[in-house]
Image (cartoon, rainbow, N blue to C red):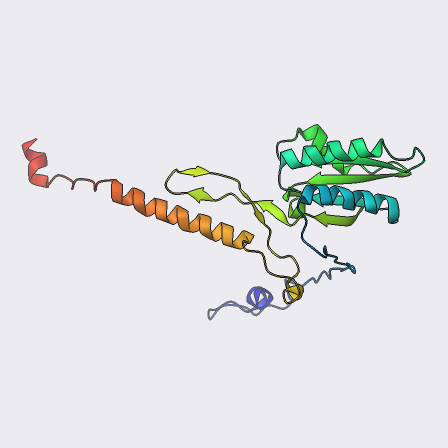
Length: 225
């Protein structure tokens, strides 16, 4: 449509027809890679502990490749990084090295940039991050992804006019498996819609509380003044 618009002859009697096309269409084909998706057979009581065990199992049993682990926030990330570091010290000294790295919004820039550095030879890195690494950044070398399935939604409350960050189930990332796996009670779209609705309710409430402005003075009153 855009190409036809720019290549079309302009309207008017004196307009000269265009001899050559001035636009071209370039198509960039993307590439997809096969992905194996695996789920837990049963729900777990502590998803952080289960995520730590999954990361260690990947490190000890799977071929080389970095790991990306999604958790909900800073507290869980720091706990996970500390637990992984502690448990690595209990393994056999001949075990390949695993370097856990945190990634969240409040982290200093120098520490955030560390996740983009390639792992040393014979070493694997695991990046423990919030969903900021889901679409905002691209990290090379990631082969395994462990998703806890939880995120921190940030709804707004019209009554208190404050925001909170409760942990809720993330949106189901594999729509094709909706028949096999139950849908979460809350999704990101639902949270955003609820926040928008609450914002609209707040705006209407404020409009009701603000009194109407007085009418402007008439020309006669201006002359008398």
